[in-house]
Image (cartoon, rainbow, N blue to C red; front, side, top):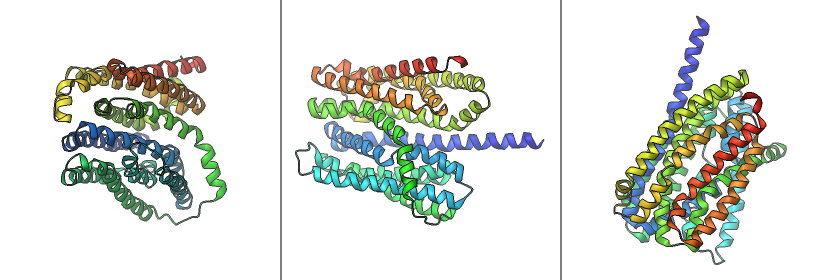
Amino acid sequence: MITGTFLKLKKTKILSNFVNLSSIQLSNALLMILLYPIITRSVGLEAFGLIMLANAFAGLLGIVVNFGTSQSGIKDVAVHKSDPASLSKVFYNTLLIRLIIFLAFSLLFLLAGFGNFIHYKYYLFAIPLILSEVVNPLFLYLGTEKLAIYNMANLIGKVLIIAGVIILINGASDAIWVNFLIGAVNFFIYIFLIFKGIADYKLPFIKPAKTDMLQLTKGNFFLVGNNISVHLQQSLMLFALARWGNPMWLGAYSLCDKITWSSRLMIMSISNSVYPKAASLFSESPQQFLAFKSRIKQMLFWSFLGVSVSIMIFAGPIIYVIAGEPNATAVTILRIMAFVPAAAALNCLNVLELLIRGNNQSIFNIALILLGLAFSLAFGISVLKDIYLLGAYTLIIEISAIAMYEYVIKKEYPVYL
């Protein structure tokens, strides 16, 4: 009886975590999708492309600043959440390493302003986005499995961003302020959550030790390397188009990329929510884990295949609603990119399996190969100026990733197949 009650409580907690985490990602996706037509109608598609270019650049530096702590921090918080002293060490170590990296990059970035840095002002005004990553305490709330307050604050922040864009952004001349506004709102929301977390979990300040910082740096090297590679695979085409491509193509591609990325957010939320259960099953029996993986994989694939087909069929209306005007270039690109969500859904649990098996080296190696492929494709497509290849860029990367992950899993772990 007691065991049955415990299992019910455990399932309820898993469901609660899934709902909260999914709602965070879903609110991000839906509210950001709502934001895109507001921005494009205010500044135009060309300026929207520059905004997304700077956003991608800030995202790249944000990954470096985060240094994999959004992943390692969750595990460390979960292990030490019942011990305030140990939890404090994890908390302040994480914030300090992020701050150190941010200050170093900020100095280099400000010095870069003296050079011939194309679209430099757009990048400069996106610095608050990077700063918000320094203070993002998601690792604390996710590790302690108490996401309700984070979820609520996140929703309030997104609503404030939308309201700010509607009120303050009026024309292409204001486009430079969009990323600044998003970053500033997120920064203050996260600062509030940090102080609330310190109060709720009674975290006394503990000066980070040099040995702890070195261990964190060494331990997260492969994680940050993989995260940078994944981000560059997504954003390299934006940088290539900004340097060698057509400005209108940049805007059209940016819009389509954000549409498909919204589906990725949901896929990642589901993957993160099943991570604890998958890890637990694997520790009990790899066979149980593989059966669980197969069920979730099929569910994700068929669900997001439906999303992909819908995007392909309704590409025209989707672009019209978001851009505020018809755009044949964007419609062509989106129809080709439409199957990216289905491909991403097919591969996400392969990544999860290698993480559970502790095979960070293979994840890193695959990321490097994909990065090389992305560089070659981005340069070649921007020079050839082929719109069909442009639409296929992300899909080629996704299909290549599936092939490599499947190869590694079948080669290195044949005993469980």
